[in-house]
Image (cartoon, rainbow over all chains, first blue to last red):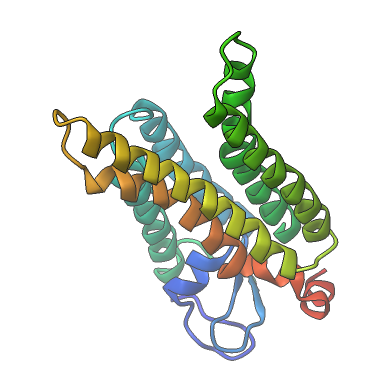
Length: 94
Length: 134
């Protein structure tokens, strides 16, 4: 499990959800920046984008696009990235 | 990264909710029959356009007060858009009012507001934190 190097707190889902940079997550406990390993993080981000971007393009223009397509797809991508960090597949820099 | 997130969000909102609604009356006003509604819409969006330009300049200069004004004007635009949809649907007896369409219209601006107010990008307005991160 990936933890904050400063306070040893586990990385929370809200930390991952709130970040605008997928390679830098802010610890929800001590507010210190947790740097994500560029190699494993980069591969994870690439795979997630490779899945979600075609989905968003295919369904673009369908009725209720934002509610029925964009919201679930982006939420699933965020949950997926969080689980990859939590399981330690995407590593954090110590 | 925070600066990029804030500026891109603001610019996208400006294009979708101000530039496009402003262009529609401009295109229709060129026709010979100019309606009062078109002139009113043009004047309203003209004022919103100019105010938002000032807001964007102030937002780039990390003045958070102007962000509230900017999003207030964005939500005015959305309010008019939703009101338009509701009135047209109620007037025509064929179509039923679809709440999911209204939620669908609201999702993007709410998402944009969440980015600038609640995500880590809000540190852009906190000068000390931003300097620390850099």
